[in-house]
Image 1: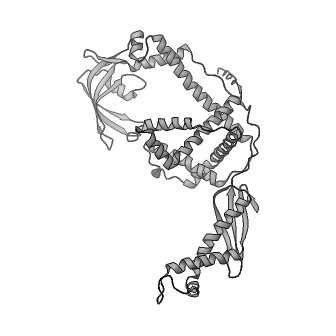
Image 2 (image 1 turned 30 degrees about the horizontal axis):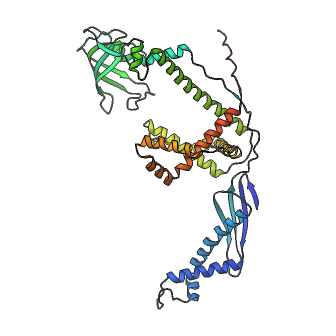
Image 3 (image 1 turned 135 degrees about the vertical axis):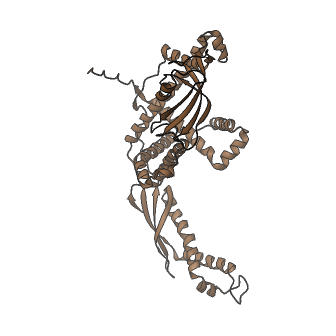
Length: 429
């Protein structure tokens, strides 16, 4: 057996004449039982005639039966884990001679696992300040605000304008909203709306043009100049609730505003810890990959590229972008994904190796919890969800994901954590 390159191997295999003859006879009998020849009852055509008339079919049957069987036996003998499908070439099959062929294939890499405990990473425990809590509380308070109508008067900055808006020209599909609320002069309001509505009183009608930026979120309006007709229906003011215990009770199972603040602090901390640990785990994986040099099968990399591209296409579709209209050179797209995908595959293989060495795996209880979550999302019985996941092979993927996450958490716990250095002060110009 010869190592071609990386994980690619080639092997030349010879099938003994006795096996060739035995398989040939089996193929002849199978074809004899199926063919219908003039002058003979079904299945009763002479063997010699069958061999003559159907020589090509017999040859194909023999090759298709013997080549994969003897290839499997050869790699099993050498205890090789074949990746993907082998390619066969140089097939020689002549009467009275052994059947010989060449197989080229890839094998899973042999990984010499180096040190993976105590990897040094940059990590600081997140903190939550009183100002962070107050800011989040103000956001919640703002969401609970009520808007009261003012006596009719001209709009000024800071007012909330309720307008009926319709497009007159500039857009293929008409834009129409019966009650659109805009804050005049606010940074979230397009300046042209504020400029054209400022000073208007209820029942006033204004017509004006709005030019949308090229990167505007709503693609049907991006880059267009649209003429609108706006009727001011009301002027409103925002009324914020008081931050007291009554406000806390309205938010749920709280008795005091201090309980709300404590819950907010806990939530912010949990979110920051998750994000900080995710970033630290990415560091870990990068250092782990950099410390281990081994080849990976192209089949693994190609599959990872496919997964990455599929994910990107789903993201584009979610944004309302049709990938077919982008006119992409898919060969270049795939090539651009190669390095990242190769590192992703290496990271996955290393995590598998570490989880095997550390005996890390998913418990039945952990898998059951995930099934319960999915069942709740799908609004169906857990048994029904489990049956579907079992049929699709998704249970194994769920268990694999749990094992990967547990292995990453293990590496994070074992890592040496160093605080990030403070940012250097920028010199005043």
